[in-house]
Image 1 (spheres, helix red, strand yellow):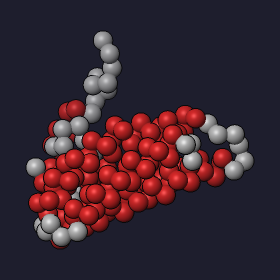
Image 2 (cartoon, one colour; image 1 turned 30 degrees about the horizontal axis):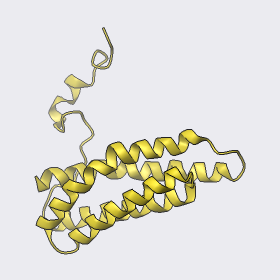
Image 3 (cartoon, helix red, strand yellow; image 1 turned 180 degrees about the horizontal axis):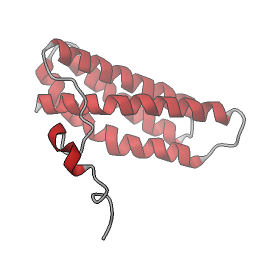
Image 4 (cartoon, helix red, strand yellow; image 1 turned 90 degrees about the vertical axis):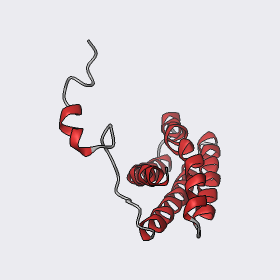
Length: 145
């Protein structure tokens, strides 16, 4: 279970990093343009569907890893909750700050996992098994009917 959690976190990290760039762009645009509520809704959906489900497994894995992992997992949960509040307040600067804190928690956790010889490579395919990528990612998979 710890290895699976570490790989999930490794898969989420690049997505968080790309979201930070998007939120920074939204923050820049908000200085000149009226705010678009869909931008905050996108970050909120990402937080709820991707980050929140990781909080509990991260706490369990943190207890097994030891060291600073429990502190990092607790900080992760706090920052995800603060990200939710920032999205509701429509504050792009706070969203970016909280996403950067989430990224640092994830990076620290993965660095600790790497030192303890866990596999910290990300898995971007459907099954988390790279051998089936050619079969699953074809044009028929995502078509209805």
